[in-house]
Image 1: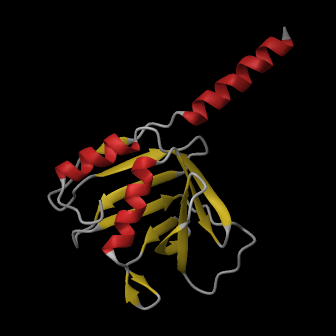
Image 2: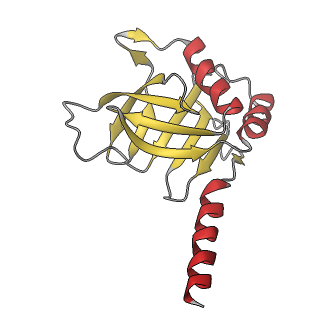
Image 3: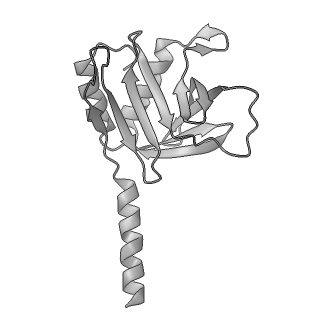
Length: 161
């Protein structure tokens, strides 16, 4: 009996974490374009919105930075590794509330082509690891991401989607 209950709980935990739902968030104000987001079983949220500058705006919340990494300031480079492929970099500002996309990478504006590379990989992959300092901060299921990102792109004229 105990084995049956444990097996059912394990199966439930596996299936719960495997099928994340991507949500299309509606605009909440006149200057808000909405966003698309997914939340994993650990409560981490990957959100892709459209900033006031007309380009994508990616965030990872809450603060999931590895505790053993040393930080000189808030600037960081976050990597998105889709299905174990080549990691794609995103400049970020990380703090107590999470990591938020920045617009400068190595003193230069972050190219829209790199933004598109990330969103394209998120659309076509099955899972993504978000890394900082070579360590996984979070992992997300990408099932449904293509439809959600496609619908968001159709609703906005956001560059980088």
